[in-house]
Length: 222
Image 1 (cartoon, rainbow, N blue to C red):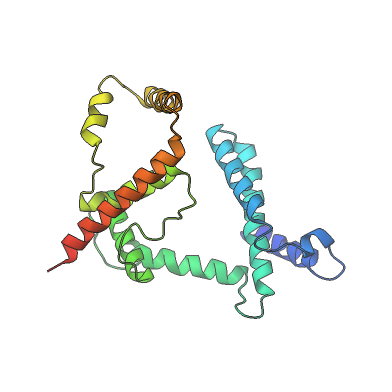
Image 2: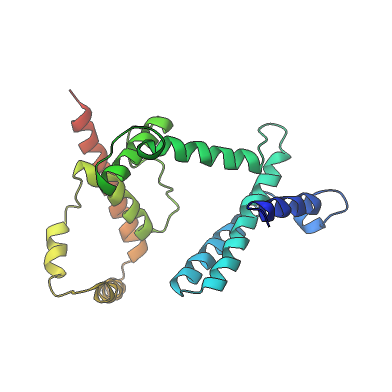
C-alpha cells in the first residue's frame, strides 16, 4: 500500500456514507452533534497512551482520524464557507513550514526553549493576538489550562504569586508519583473545606492570565 492510500479510502467511504443511498445516521450528523464523539475519542487516545497499549492506540487514532474526516466531509457540503480534507491537510502543512523556520528556512534558534518561544511568537503574529494567553480554550479542564498558560508565559518570567509557598510544601516530594499523591491529597483537603478544586483552579487561572497580560503590557510599553 502506498502511503496515503488508507486515508484516501477512508475519505471515499465517508463520501459514500454521507451521499444519497448511504447511511441515514451518518447523513444527519452535524459539527455540533459530533462534538461528544470527538471529545470521547480524544480521551480514549489518551487512555491508550497512558496504558502503553500500542494496538489500542492504533485503533483509537483511527477513530480520532475518522472524526477529522467526518467534520471535513460535513464542511465540504457548506454553501457559505466550504472546505474539505485536502484544505485541512494543506493548512497544517503550510503552518508547520511557517512555524519551523529553523528547519525550512535559514533562521537560527537557540535550543528547544528557543524553538517553543519562537513558535509562540510566530503564532501570536499570525493570529494578530496581543497576549500569549489568547487562544487557549476556556473550556479546557483547569489543570490543563494552567499548564498551557504557564508554558506559554514562561519566557516573559510570569510566576504564580504563591510559588514560594508551593516550593516549601513540596520540599519532601521526591518524584512525580509522590507529586500526584500530593495533588490528590490537596483535592481531598479542599473537599473537607467544601471547596471545589476545579472551580478554585479556574478562578486562579483567570487571575494569573490577568497578571500575564499586565507583564506583557509593561514589556511592550515604551
